Length: 349
Length: 58
Image 1: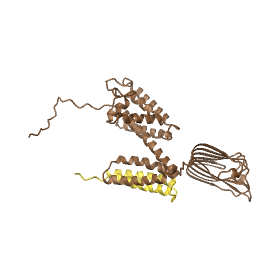
Image 2: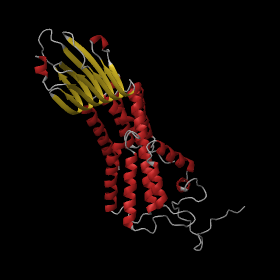
Image 3: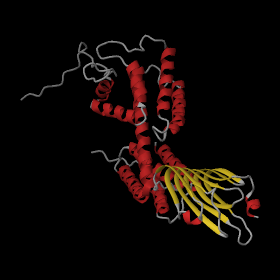
Image 4: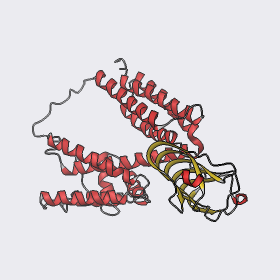
């Protein structure tokens, strides 16, 4: 039995065709973008179609991305892209317009974390400019750069969506479970490090841990529903023991109320949003508020920032009616709105 | 068979995640009250430790 020796490479042998990102003319439903992406990355095009579909449903960012790929990618039958014969300036302007369009799609309420992406996009843009300044992308196939940018954008959207989901679970009472999972994920990273695992494992763990830290530090509690709630009370018997809302605007109108002598407590619990207590002119009000991140607008005092703890006390004379507002806000705004401009001391004198 | 190479960056990241996760767990159990004033520096320090480890491991 003889063993075939490998043949030396022949000079006239056809060189392997370089893989190019192109729109598919054979595997397409709209313009062949997903089919081309699937062939380029060796993945099922259905994955890209699902990703585009999901992104369209949740914010619509997939629309400008699809348009960008449609404009810049040639087809696999040799036809050039729409932007092939355009000037470089036209291409840059088109990309900027599509980028602005993408960011616009990401604003609330379509996508909760949309505004945050503006900052991320700015940082990413500066990074790209620096990279180009050092010649990193010079000469690179524009289609490949667009495809890479598309994947980064889709990955970013997916990561922010996952982080929002983790934060939501932690804020509706699953915080202990998420924290335990985070600790176990840390153990998993150590195990991966010992056996020489992949470093990208750090990224999903960051997506898990960061929203948990935000929810824990801000004390966000989303139990209590979503929406706009307005309550009114004209006597202490009409007051609820607690006014709670998960996300939204909470208004408590006490302008028609006559307080009995002594202290009357009102308790507000808000996860994310704004809480407003309206009180009549001359009412003596004291406040004990805790806000993870946000702002307060109280008689005599307006603050903003992180970890706000506001305690407004007064020493009213014996038997003077006092309304005491206890508020716990995760992220948002607390306002105590009185129909006059008297200070706490004047009102409680 | 080549020996497996221990990745110190992953180990540092794991330790940092365990520390931060433990802080969050204590907060969720109402043992401590976590605030941004402590959480933000802790997270940044964890990032810094991981980056330092990655840099020193190269």
